[in-house]
Length: 512
Ligand code: GLU
Image (cartoon, rainbow, N blue to C red; front, top):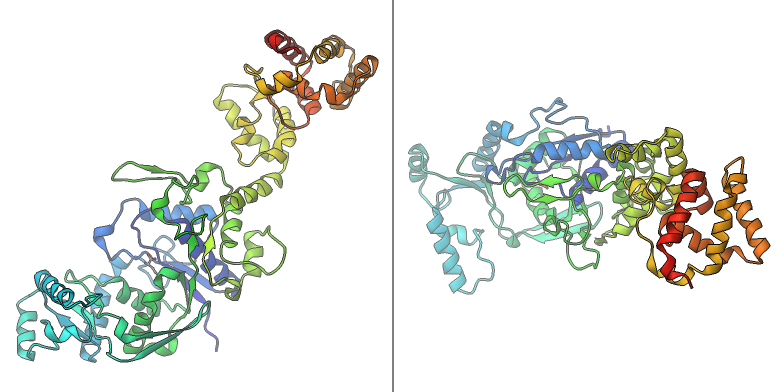
């Protein structure tokens, strides 16, 4: 019988979740959804030295914002609770000891000084990467080199020790990665990794394998940086007698910096001009703030659509996908092997698409909120109209105010470049007539306003192109924007008059 698909996202709470981590979580989620399986979140907090307050909460909040729903987690509970490794501490030692009994691991009593001395010795002998391994272990103080009685005594007397994996000297370790195919690694390149630390905590490697097994994980989908650890994990599955239910592996390609040079890292922070974290993060130790996609105005549906495409593609032209559609289309086979360059313009594009697809009534709420913050009153109807006019031109919700404040405020400054070129005596004469005849329009609509302007232009033997930019300048102060007649309609007759008068006064020196 096929096993139910079970995947996990297993972050360490050592800081804010990086965008690459969110992508890993997303791919796990999409795969589980596609396969009708389950996804769990496990907090890998065995390294107490790297604990960062708030990081775990940040992980939950980020996943929730993205719409990644968990079946099991420290918060949701589940049949394999607890889901925090620090709370599972007592169960790992048994597995480590079993490995020792079966001859696949050993106690090592070396002190920090002894380990340093070993490294110095090897360096002096020109060994490129000094390691505790199948060769060097023979010269160290461990249960393989010490007499059994001594080991017993050391253990009984409470001498600090670690448990190391006994990696075979000459063995080819193979593993099949669902993205990269067969990966072959020679065991001589792997060191005798510590499985249990002297504080009784397991290391990542042991805890990860024990938990994936106990939690029935069928597929391990994680970042490429874990690929070098995978052969070691294969050995652990084998030595623990779990090889037949070993999960399948899929190592995701790296996210690269926009120029393709190197991995996009947490440290890039805002240096590249865009966020690398889903939510804003304030470092609890330094107070340093890093921006987040949420606070920058990205919609979660745009963010996940963008993320899904960073390394995966559906093999069709379709670019816009809801979460359900992504899950439907998702397959591990369509994840690329090579690193994906990060392109923030694509994220912006997605945001624009998702904003535009929203009804004007919903978009109006963004504007109304900003207006309230600026103590400007505005009817819902007017806000809806403005949103409709602006939606093709905005990237973020905050742009409705940022880019459309001229609907509410008479310009105080005018684009001087446009003024220099377009503020002509002929245009000013047209505006004078236009302003005086606005009263004649009984139904103040964009169409009727345009008609009036055209009539005046015709009388003067002029073309609309000769005045449009100057009129836009008078009304908005800017060179470009949405349909000008719609703007004039929305600001109303009195304000239109007022703005033409104000511009005529202020731009006198530009008349050419
Ligand atoms: N705790 C590891 C991390 O922080 C998990 C790696 C894995 O998925 O095996 O990414």
